[in-house]
Image (cartoon, rainbow, N blue to C red):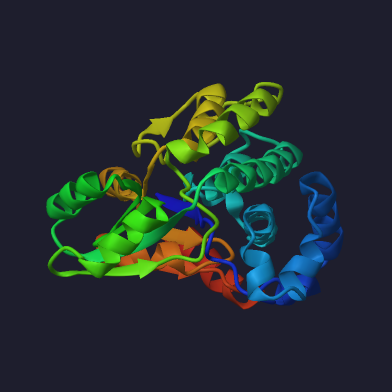
Length: 303
């Protein structure tokens, strides 16, 4: 089975959408995505600087829009047998699988970004990546400091979240064998700090139509494959304040016999994790339209 994966916040970079605007219909599609999400995505993806596109309200719809733009440019999408997204990338995955319309996906993501940005103002919180070390020892140290594991990324990478003071204490006295890298984000995403955003998003999500998926959809909640469109949408909502279990998604890929992974724009992060955790599985990162040929070849190749 060949699958498509969709990245999350932090994968964007200044000007990364510029090469995509040369594709037929891309500018019109992005203009429509901008209207739905409430963000000028053409300007954000071609003109705005790193600080401006780091803003949660901008980054989330920008990433989902880029993923859907590149997904629609991929030939032979019908040969893709499954999808998964990392954090906000789950909205792009849901649209690619036919669970949500693109309009509903972009409207919900625009709301999600605004609600999470608002929730982040309630306390001085942040996130840090912890690289390496013994996971049990790291989790024990987090418990001591009142920090929460937010992203289990696999490949020896854990993203933790919580109060700034606690994150600083972790960096000052890291667990043996680890590196602690502060992340440039607005707050403690995927933790209880985001509970107000969950309730905001839940109300809007309850009003959208959810179709059962056309292909396998794995959830960040626990790596399980979900078959109900409504259950997938409910998981998208709950995920805002719960950990991303990308490690379990990758384990599920292995159990399902996944034989190729295409990461849609802005690509690179998830294929990097797959190369460490799923050795031997071919991957293609679709960073620009020049990568579409390699993606098509991978999707079309025999298992």
